[in-house]
Image (cartoon, rainbow, N blue to C red; front, side, top):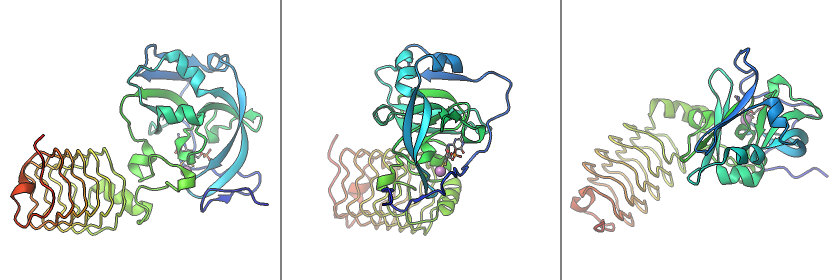
Amino acid sequence: MNPPLPPRQSLAAPGKWPVVGEKAPRASDAPWTLEIVGAVTGPLVFTLDELIALGTETRTIDLHCVTRWSKLNVPFGGVALEKALALAQPSSDARFLSFVARSERNHSTSLPLDDALALGVFLATHADEKPLETIHGGPLRSICPERYFYKSVKWLERIEVLTEDRLGYWESEAGYHNRAEPWAEERYIAPSVAPKILERALASRAFSRLDLRGVELSGRELRGLIARGSLLRDARFVGCDLRGADFTEANLSNAHLDGADLTGARLTDADLEGASLDGANLTGADLSGASLFGTTFLGATGAAAQREEGFGGSLPRPA
Ligand SMILES: Nc1nc2c(c(=O)[nH]1)N[C@H]1C(S)=C(S)[C@@H](COP(=O)(O)O)O[C@H]1N2
Ligand SMILES: [Mo]
C-alpha cells in the first residue's frame, strides 16, 4: 500500500532529498546564533549550545515541497520552537513569526504565531541521526510540519515576533500561497496562471488581461496597479493599497476589496457584481459604467458610488 500523499504530490526516490532554493548560507566567521526579537518582553540570543541545552528531542516529520515531491517520516533532531519562544515571552499583541535566514537575500518565511505553536514548529540541528547538512540548512533550520516545505527556513538565525504579518521571500516574490496547506493544495495565490507569469505581473504591477481568478493579494501595497480587462473574479484585495489603480473593464465579480484604499482608482465599466467594498476608501474613484448589482459598500468612504448613474447596488450607509 502506498502511503497517503497530499493531492498531486509524489514520493522522492528512496534515499534522495532534492535541494530547492538557496544552496548555501551567507559566508561568515561569526559563530552561529539564534536571535528572538520583536514583540517580546525579553529579546534573546542563543548560541547553538544554549539552544540545545533547552532539551532536544526527535520528531518524525513529512516534507511536501510545492514543486511536488514529498519525503515521509524524516526523523529530525532538535528543539521545539515553543521552548525557545517561551523564554523570550511574546507580548500580548504578538500574532506572527518571521523566520529569517543567514543568507545573501536574507531569505524569510512567516507563520501565524498560533499555527506555529499548534503545528509544532521544530528547530532542527539533525536529520536521520546526523548533523543537518549545510545544503539542507545546517547547522539550524526551522521545520514546519503540515505546510509546504517553503515554510521551513534553512540557516535560521533570527525569529522576529510580529504584530502584523510580513510576507516571506517566495510568498512575496513568486506568488506562493501564504498559508501553504498541502492537503488543501494551497500552492500558489493564483492557481490559474503559471507562477512565472504571476511573478512578472507582480513585479511590474501589470495585470492587464490576465486570468487571475481567485488571486489572494490581501494586505499588499499595489499602488498604481494596471489591471485593465483582467479576470479577477473572486480575487481578494482586502486592505490593499490600490490608490490610482486602473481596473477599467476588469471582471471583479465577487471580489473582496474590503478596507482597500481605492483613492483615485478607475473602476470604469468594471464588473463589481457581488463584490464587497465594505470600509473601502473610494474618494475620487471612478465607477462610471460599473455593474454594481449586489455590491456592498458598508461603511465605505467617498461618495462616488452613490452618484453613479445606473447604480443598481446597495448604497453606502452612513458610518
Ligand atoms: N534560506 C532558505 N530557506 C529555504 C529556501 C531558500 O531558498 N532559502 N527555499 C525553501 C523551499 S521552496 C523548499 S522546498 C525547502 C527546500 O529545502 P531543501 O533544499 O533542504 O530540500 O527550503 C525552503 N527554505
Ligand atoms: Mo519548495
